[in-house]
Length: 330
Picture 1: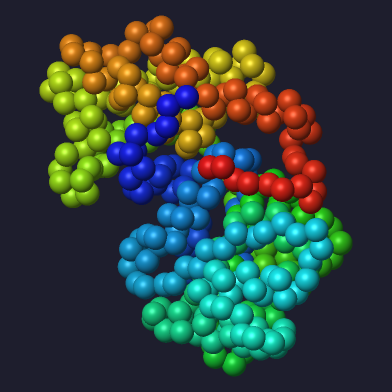
Picture 2 (picture 1 turned 90 degrees about the vertical axis):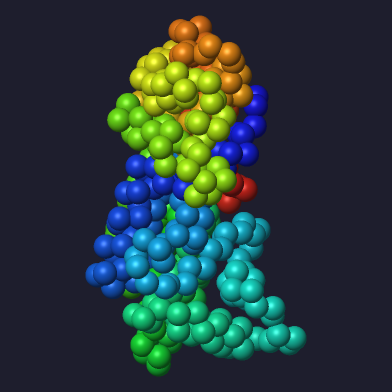
């Protein structure tokens, strides 16, 4: 399996339609002063890339500065308040004061959020929690305490965006069913499912970005396609030309392997296939397009379908056991 070409690690490449939907929802949530929401989806679809994009570029998209703190919720055999507070402090770039108790830890966290909120004209700061399906009720209570203190004393809004696997939605549904409105109304006021590319149009959108809007070096005017396949580019070949055959071959293989949903390509699979096309075919002399056999090779060589099938065989119920170590290799 070939690794993605370094050119295809350009940050702007990950602004695909699924990520665009999350960004638009996030902007709306901030405008409405919603205090916390969730984004959930299966593994390897690009959720972690989405979180990284938010951290790097949300200020540019909003048109004003806003601090985004990104942390990964760690798995512990047993959960203690101070462990979670230490993880927040680590994400904030703060070290734990010697002999500090819970109150001192919270004070350090609040003070750091206050500093970050000064960058924003609307006195808002965002905390993105990746792998949020690991959160327990104790963690929600800690986060609400921080929100309350920041707003009641300083009029600063701490927005929490929880990003996780489908168990996160299940947790929200159970909290709603049990009447835990103090948690759901504050921390999980809305939800959005993060999915892969689920139409030919979305695959074309991503491939066209490589052709037209992703440059290497940045702002050079030379797109990935032009730089990696100059002869094919001169002959008017574009990666977008391969969107339909790749989509057809990929979804056909998913159907053969009984993978659900049939019509879906993850961001990682899309990037690996684009890399494979450039590395093995598009750079050849007189290349004008993939043959059906080459398209099949691209789909199989990306290796993502095999990984997905393995995960489905190991976990036919569609979710991982609660408490197991989980990573979002997106």
